[in-house]
Image (cartoon, rainbow, N blue to C red):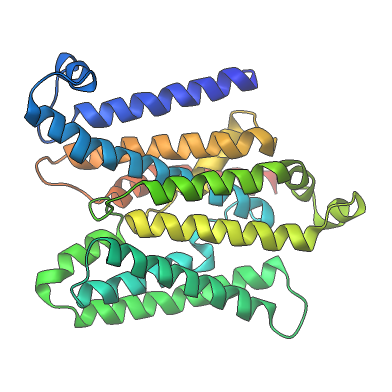
Amino acid sequence: MRTPAFLALLTALALASVLVALAIGSASISTAELWAALRGAGSETTRIVLFELRLPRAFIAFLTGALLALAGALLQVLLRNPLADPYVLGVSGGAAVAALVAMLLGVAGLALTGSAFAGGLIATLLVFGLARGPGAWSGTRLLLTGVVLAAGWGALIGFILSLSPDAGLRGMLFWLMGDLSYASDWRPALAVLVVGLLATWPTARSLNVMARGELLAGSLGVDVRRTNLRLFAVSALLTATAVTQAGSIGFVGLVVPHLVRLAGFTDHRVLLPAAALAGGTLVVFADSVARTLLAPQQLPVGVVTALLGVPLFLYLLQREAGRA
């Protein structure tokens, strides 16, 4: 498939996922009602459900998936690890700890989002500060530091949950497993996604070379250290923003870039925007399933992405083992 056709297909799938998210739910909306509401006609109740409940949630779901997939595509090249995930740096753990503390204090709305974002930024600063250390900075050291800090954040999360009152425990657990109901404004996530694409797409040629090794990239004139620092910071920002919007949604950043590569598109000039489109589409579909599978009860969207991601992860693991 040619690149324009592939991107057009992904765009069509993204639009289809949003339309599906608008039409289905605890109360289904027919195609005629949906079309009438989009034209400004139809009943007031239908318009309220669409434009105040479902459409903002669909936007947030799409942006969250796009942020995670873009961050995953970057990290898999920067860490030179095909199984790298956006949460490998422990950013999600720091954001989760700050959000849970805010929930314990009774904080909600934008203040909760701000708390999670602040926790994600603190976690990012810790990872980069400790990974730098007294010696030379390296991707391996950054990876190991992130894994250790993620374990520490996980211990803090368990401690907070053990102290939490029963009344708020369910909401905390839902958020930890991926919950889109707390997100209220999709515009900050859109701004971060646009900034992330503008900051990373011009470096796509460098990423193509860096995927073959730092020595080759350096010999071809790529400033490896500066590119690494810049793109690691961007990936951390993308991950922190996704966590503040929807909690911890796993496997999206891991499997989506690989699926794009399996389709035959390894050039990062195509891979980066394609991963963003595919990741957003996956999370929108997963959220639609989470809302309707046991309606009116809702599942955490992270549960659905995990059910989809585990078999794909095992397949990719076996594939890498076969190559080795």
